[in-house]
Image 1 (cartoon, helix red, strand yellow):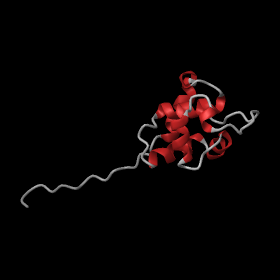
Image 2 (cartoon, one colour; image 1 turned 180 degrees about the vertical axis):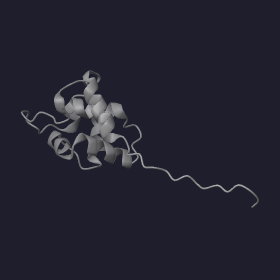
Image 3 (cartoon, one colour; image 1 turned 180 degrees about the horizontal axis):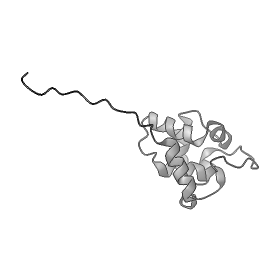
Image 4 (tube, helix red, strand yellow; image 1 turned 45 degrees about the horizontal axis):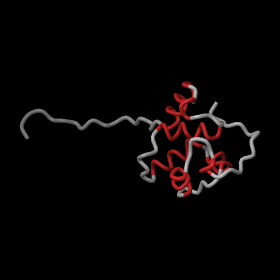
Length: 108
């Protein structure tokens, strides 16, 4: 369900896509994404993770859903719940076991 349809002509500029405007276009351009086809090729999860890694804190899950909607011609508020959950899982950091610091009882 995360894969966007390919029957559209993927040559629109980012700012021309539903849900995404000039600010999103500027941010995506900073990671080399300028057009719809660039976004399709990079993948929205990878684009989102790159934006977050670059420090764009304003890119929340809503932005991820907006990118999905842009590639599916769907308003971000209309993204199906199962897609939202799939996207959440896709960007959730892998939990790594943390080592507990050993403590010694008694005199130091």
